Every structure is written in structure tokens, then in C-alpha cells.
Amino acid sequence: MLQRDDDGAATHLVNAGNQASVKLLRAALDAAGAGRDTAGLRAAVLYRLAWERAALGDRHGALQELDGADVSAALAVPAPDMVEDGDLRGGGAAARRGKALRRAGCPTAAETALAEAVAARLHPSGALVDLARIRAAGGDVDGAVAALEEAYLTARTAGSRRSEAKVRHIAATLPDSAATRSLADLIRA
Image (cartoon, rainbow, N blue to C red; front, side, top):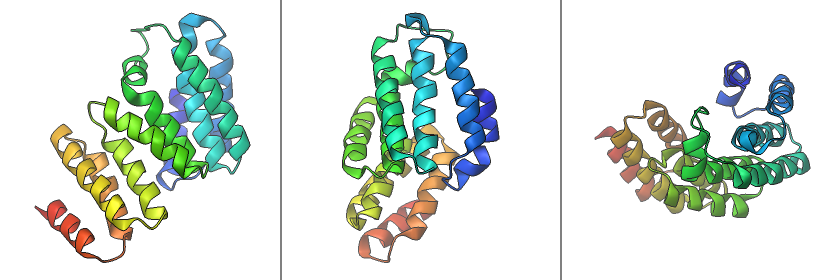
């Protein structure tokens, strides 16, 4: 799974899927097995697989992977040796679901999942960025700006330069308005 994260990093920067990543994730899923003790690992793999399939244009496949990921996340027992275990329990599952649903072109379901993630996560900047993308794509500039403002402040508080950069990138794509000028002022401050 780590190899997929490393190999797929370049294509993810441009929001594209990667067939090689799908193969690596399938291999990780096979290696994880079907035991309840590896359900959290399976969930993490399946959420990544759902995003990849959505990015490759396979909406139906992405939704199937999300169903499997949700079931695995619900069955997961605490696994302190898995790095992402705490995150999956702390709103990470909802955030990953929302990210995959956004990529699959299901904005209403994605917004619901991301709102759940924002409410549950300690540092929800990534979920807020995805929420802003959905709102911007739907023409709700004020809603996108509100989510980006909150994401930026959360990212700054957490020291997440990556999330700050994502906010700047999305803010630059929004049409000029009083709200976007206010956001620009916040980012410059």
C-alpha cells in the first residue's frame, strides 16, 4: 500500500487515477486477507481503491469499493499497529468516502460524508478543502469560500503547509467576488 502511495503521488497531484495503483491496491487487499483483525487495513485499502476507480472513470466500481470499505470499517477492531487506525475511527472513513464520492461525481452524497468528517475530525482541513471543491463545482462560490476560510484557519493552526497550499490553489480558481477578495486577504495576512 505504501508503494501505491509513493507511485501514485504524481498522478494524484493532478487528480488523475493510475491503473498501476489499482493493481498494487488489489495485491494489498489480497495480502490483508478476510479476518476481522485486518478489517481496518482492508477499509483503508478499499477507500483508496474507490478513489482510484472513480478517478479512472469507473463510477460503478468506485461505489462498490466504497460499500466494501464501509463494511470493513464497521467491522474493524482496534489495530494499534496500523498507522491509519485512529484516523479511520476519528472521521477518516467519512473523509475518504467523501473524497471518493466527489471524484465519482456524486456531490450530494460526498457533501454529506464530508460534513460528517468535518464534525468528527480533530483537524478537518482536508475534508473542508474537498467540501469547497464540491461547492465551487456547483456554482456556490460563497459556500466554497466559507469552507476554504475554515480549512485555511484549521490548516494554519495545525501547521499543515500542504492543506494551506491546496486552499491557495482552489481559491485561485474561484471567480472574483467580495467573498473571494476577503479570502485572499485572509491568506495574505
